[in-house]
Amino acid sequence: MKTILIASLAILVSSCTSMSPKECKVADWKVVGYQDALRGSNTQIADYNQSCAKVNIKPNVPLYMQGYNQGAKLFCTYDNGLKEGENGDYVSNTCKRPGLTYNFMQGYQQGYKLYEKQQRINDLQQKIDSLNEKIEAIRDSKVKRSTQDIDLLYREKELINQQIALSKSEFRSDTFLK
Image (cartoon, rainbow, N blue to C red; front, top):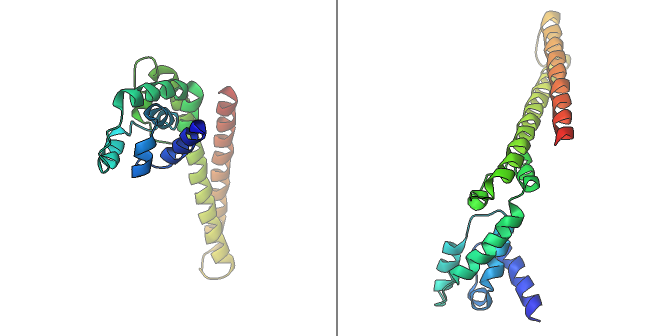
């Protein structure tokens, strides 16, 4: 029963940083810290301190930090850094500790390069979409343009398509190398 309560509390705590008075009373601070670190979030002890002060409960900081440090060791890996970087996520302070930074940041930097390349592809695709709208407006006679203007739009579109193809090729080769 206690295991179910701890697991339930961990799920509740992982969804937000404030705690209800009831959660404060039954919190396993080691599990709470562990879950915070596994999410890659900064320590939340100050928020818990504030929430639990309403019911005169002080979080057990040493237990919280013990759990947090254990969770950080599992979170701060190359693979998690890679995922965080690929998502363009903010780097928390969780892995900014001796012994945890190097592998995580190696993965993060590689992932962030992929993120930037994907963003470039998305930006180029938006330019294509904009050119398609301009071409469509000309075809629908909403905008008067010369044949030469239309030809220039198609040439610009072709150049951007080539950039997209090159960017996708680079992205695939970088993805393959990870």
